[in-house]
Amino acid sequence: MSAVRVLLLVLVLTLPAIAADPVSISLLPKPVGTDAVITIGQAARLSGGSAAAREKMAQLDLIDRTDIEAISRKLVRYRLKLAGFADADFTFGDAAVPNGALLSPEAVEEAARQELIRRLGVAPGEAYVDVVKPIVVKLPVAHASDVVELTAVPVGGAVKLGRTQMDVTIKVNGERKLTLPVFLNATAAGVVPVKAEKPADDIVVKARQRVTITVKSGGAIVTGAGMATEAGKLGQRIRVENLDSKKVISATVTGPEAVEIDLGEGK
Image 1 (cartoon, one colour):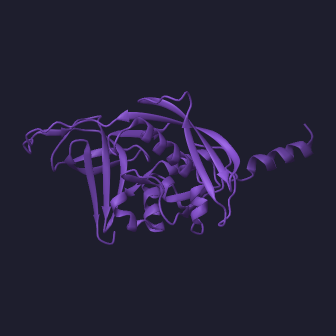
Image 2 (cartoon, one colour):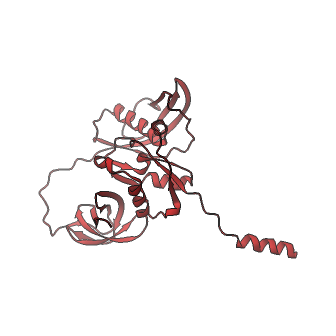
Image 3 (spheres, rainbow, N blue to C red):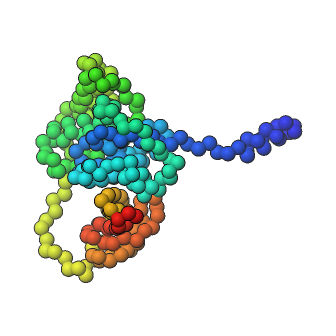
């Protein structure tokens, strides 16, 4: 091998790795959807970065819909850090305009979700409808003065609980711009029977059981998914693995499949 080739090989091997572009996050004027818990994808428009990073960020639970006024960049940053993302993984852009929110993947998914619920004939809260595959196609552009219509219809006509493909047609000023499939999964909401209250010394969280982690910091509340590494009674502190960051943390058992971390004011 020539000296020139050896030098080029050394230069290539010693070049620093090119960091992935950060995901740009623009908060929407109003979160889309009607779910009880708002995700980052429903509260903001995500662009740039990798598709995998955007998808993971979008699916993170952010806050209860009853606390919608508490949504802020600080809360989103806190939730992303809790999920294991570094500051270099994301940036914040200007607030998205309402029409941009209308043409976001989340808005298209919500149109399909609401139409499926309507056709199932169930009341809000009687069924859960989740998106099976995220939308990755580029959506058409609309300006503030444009009239945008989203029309969703099920493939095959009839709908039932389980997996369903909804085709969503996007029209701008009456002109069809795009029709794309949205894959949903509908399940009936579980009916919880009325039971006598359990004594405080009963085990309410089992080892290796999935739990909901609630983190409180001042007035902000963030939720995430976890796995209990040990059993716990009501009020007992146990170790829980955060399924987003894979970190093991200490949390207090607050009920069946539920633990809490209270960071207090100003922490």
